[in-house]
Length: 146
Image (cartoon, rainbow, N blue to C red; front, side, top):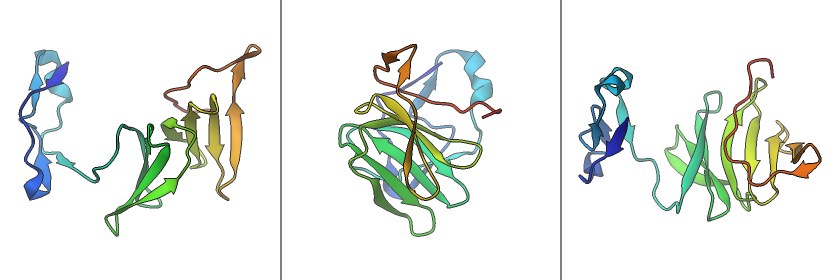
């Protein structure tokens, strides 16, 4: 278990290397999970509440949700620019990719889990269970068998 300390990161150099002085290890059993020389880099400011990052290695981009602002953002590795991926985004939260590389998203507004097809259309995967509407789906993982 670790906790952020009160120390502010200095982002003026662009990146911070681990071990991050802003993270204090409270239980030595956690130390084996620390990445020795990994880099932490701030990609964007301006989200009220960022959640659900998912990496698209084939497109070299990162997509994530900014829930209160009802949008999804996309960071392009090549251009280093952030753009709006989807707005409104139905207050999307957790995101992942399925085995075919499609985006799977939890949506608070629609109380559903949806999939963005390769052509950009949206397919509802689930909006109820045993006849009852979902409340507010949060995180999602696609099982290895689909």
